[in-house]
Length: 304
Image (tube, rainbow, N blue to C red):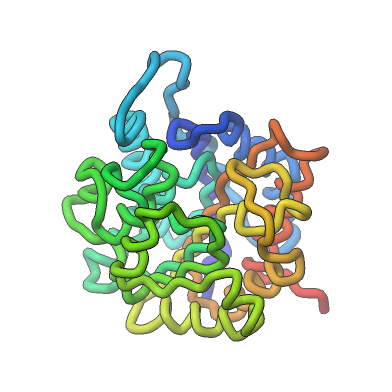
């Protein structure tokens, strides 16, 4: 049974991205009435506010293979501790980004909760990108292109080593859904990693129901619970224009809702994060509104 108490954690980090604006994502999602909508479903909602994040302007110019790594690691450690504490208190952590590098913190916290009890975490990563670059392969040095690699143990020790062990998730229990933009060097990393990747071609040919049934099996096999990491750029830009890195040809409105509804049906999702909402390039906050709708579907809202 899913906990009836939700702990909302804002992580307004934009240091991992190239385009500015996702630091305002948590505010945009809250303005779209996330807290009130969840309360309407019968949840007790506790908003823990935003974790502290340094401003890019205060850091000076950075040239690195992993830009702002110490600052990102500091934020991820804080997020990890808060997620671990929420789960330990019997609450459901809902993390609002910020860029996708915060997922290292969310996944680390959820993983640690089960790790010290002898259990494993499953992971469903919904994204237009694979996010499996390393500092050596990344063409930009932007850490938001590296978090999934870090979660399965490949990347800077500052991120892979949170809580003192690695990997946080067994690649065999990782389902990556919706990908359609992969860097050249990253392709080989993904193919050798052991994660289960479902591209937009898979969704086109098989349909979202079939793909997500398999994704749930992958993440649920022998695990104590499933964490879901939702990058809003997985959804087609016609429906979600306000994202950090939009890519044409994405998941449709109804496909996205079906995926979230199927996750809600499992009763096995123990944490959720929504990242890369960028109000600077959005249209009257419609991407944040969609994000709230998708969270609602994952948390049990149904048409009838």
